[in-house]
Amino acid sequence: MKYTWRIIGHERLTRSLENDLSTDNLGHAYLFAGPEKVGKFTVAKTFAHILQCENNFCHTCKTCIQIDKNSHPDTIVFRDDGGSIGIDVIRELIMRLNMSAQSKYKIFIAENIERMTEEACNCLLKTLEEPPQNTIFLFTAIYLKRVLPTILSRVRILKFHHCPEGVLIERLAELYPETGEETIEQISKFSLGKPGVAFDLMNDPQLISYYKTLYSDLQRFLDHKGIFDRFMYVKETENQPRKVNDILDILTHIIRSRLMAGDGQPHYTKILDKIDYTKFLLEHNINSKLALENLMLNI
Image (cartoon, rainbow, N blue to C red; front, top):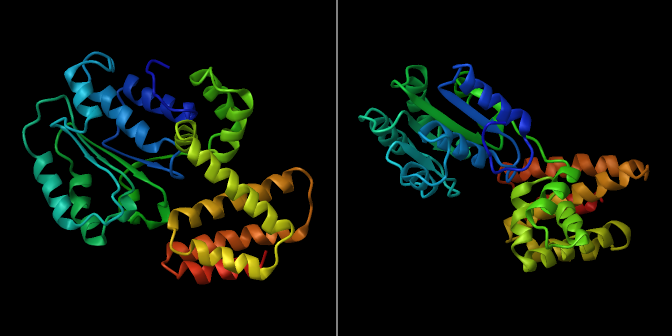
């Protein structure tokens, strides 16, 4: 690898991007797709650095510092703020892309483009079909199915996956040599294959305590608690969307771990199906309390 990508895992994907550069086969639009907090946006930002920096991604020049701060005039960055990207935003983007560039490229980085309205997507399509010279689009998405097929057909898709626990343990041990082996193994387990979560945990002891409590609660629910206790737990979490997502992820991890350990209880496979269905319901704005209560009835 020629460059330092500042992520854990995904060597095959970063090698592919470096190969595009070395063989002069650079695409005008890329879509990095996969679970949240696995490094998609970091790869997009690093790729922008490599493309714009005249000193082989030196980290210290004016261009690198500006990109880090999202203030580079020819590298436009849209982070996911939880809202939708409307047509006015895309029109402004297109206007900026057509302005004279001071750098080698005009680069547009957009996080989670599935939040783009259909009207905004249609507005963007023409620019994707006939982009201004030396313009590169770097998109990320969590849910490919929510991105319009017409957009997908005009980008190179690189699919990201969860990072193996062993890889996380090895890299965290290198990055945090003063942290104990037991703590690193625990954090690697809690992060569920998401390096971004692992870094959050390494820097926030309270977050580790939060995950420990969730693991303990869910283990207990699976083994001992009755339906009343589970419903009370749902009631306490119904207005905490972050916690709801964490519960579903951790519950999935616990059940898969039990199955891999040889616990062949048939209903575990059915629970995994129910969790997937619950996530589907939540993604389609079904009331979280009802969705979780339905899941608890099937545990």
